[in-house]
Length: 388
Ligand SMILES: Cc1cc2nc3c(=O)[nH]c(=O)nc-3n(C[C@H](O)[C@H](O)[C@H](O)COP(=O)(O)O)c2cc1C
Image (tube, rainbow, N blue to C red):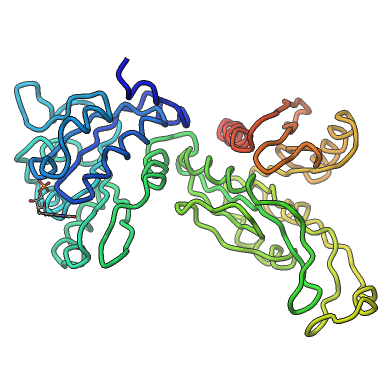
């Protein structure tokens, strides 16, 4: 078995059975292509390397042969290497030269001819000095190519247009290739809501935001256009997820009007049930603190459902009750709020990375889950994709 086989699907099977050409061109970032190829393979892709002559000055053929298990294609022969069938052609790094050649329809080596024959399947990831990247002719060429092909924006850093992280490139490739949620707009509302009781201090909860962030990540992997509304969180948000922060219930309520255009909304947020009356400055004494009055917050999901008619998934966390009682209360909530699905769990079954949960469908059927939060997120997104 070739070493590339041993890492196949190590991270996921989301690119399984996808045939990708990885075109490496003559940027110094070509040295990153070995790691990029292997990351794509870890998600299941079959990666076929193509290299320009300039790329060969930066990275050897053997490095990409080792990385992918496939002999790199560096020239055109009677085998018609430019007409091989691929699901996508990832040009990473893409030099100013290859971009401009592609925009002008030049096909004079294996890489440029493969691109010429399959422009609508190409994903370009430019990498070069910012003086080159800001060249007006290159900008025009990029605009011209964007009518046919996809571009992943480089990371502007140290005066350079650098390759973004492999994480981001792989996520974009999945989002481009997967059809499960193609053309669907998904909103995830996650994290811990909070309410202020003075200018400096808040009441909140211990939610990490992980569940919402993982659901947003998988919805993106499955091809959706994703927005994340996130409260307090102690888990990093992937750089490819667009997000906005929210604080308390009032803040969320104001955003409902903008939520109507989504195909699905998923709400694993832990929202505060009570709101303290807010004091000016800083509450100084225990007496003043004890005098703070609380009022009950309106139920966000209920209000959202009144305005929003699309696919809506709620979450219900309870504590110290039996499984049967948890299911009963979750079903009651689902009916009252007219949810399409609800995910219920007991707080004592949740830790930072794993959880037990019961996924309950609108027809009353349910399935039980125990495992990593990311696997639960994947399952929820799969069910949603089947339902939309
Ligand atoms: C050390 C070195 C680093 C280079 N880095 C880049 C780069 O990051 N991006 C780029 O567009 N060109 C870069 N070039 C210039 C390209 O290698 C050159 O334009 C070449 O013709 C590209 O050929 P290709 O597009 O066929 O691979 C670099 C050249 C050298 C010598």
